[in-house]
Image (cartoon, rainbow, N blue to C red; front, side):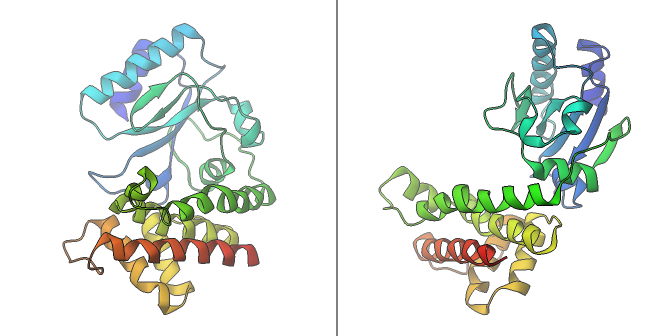
Length: 253
């Protein structure tokens, strides 16, 4: 963070007024060597072309240094004081790669994590719009759209690109630990990491699903133990069924 802030101050003096960490760092789940560093940078005004070019140089320099990847975006304090969906899609970084404009709108999840768990690195975290009803509505919508499409991917023929992707360990981790995170938010109003979502799933759902959840946890932590499935082909239908079950149960909430 020190290297990032020094580079930002050198390339664009006065631009980064506040810098706060969210994601795994804020939730106490950062894993050295695999976790990204998720951030929200507060700027006085939307960056202009010269400032965007400066930020591009900053993040390119960090990538060359081989530091942990930064994921985050640049917003004003005024943006954070309003609903996430209304915030401009300004500069952001994904997997360490900088872009001048976000492709997708902001989500209330980041707003809530920042308000409740944010770690200030520079400045004080400003007032953040965190409406529980808005969060619940977004969570239900995300389960019914984005995650239902993921469940469908696990059911497509293996000869298709989506079918091949469903065999990859990352797909199992992303889906099997992803949907319980949202289920937990609806059930408790709080937020959990991927690992904590796995433990939540083991405590919440019937034993029928424990095998695929434990497999996802094994893959997430990169434990040296053997797979709980003979092949990814055997794991795939359980992952699809689990995701569908969690979404259906979330509707009950």
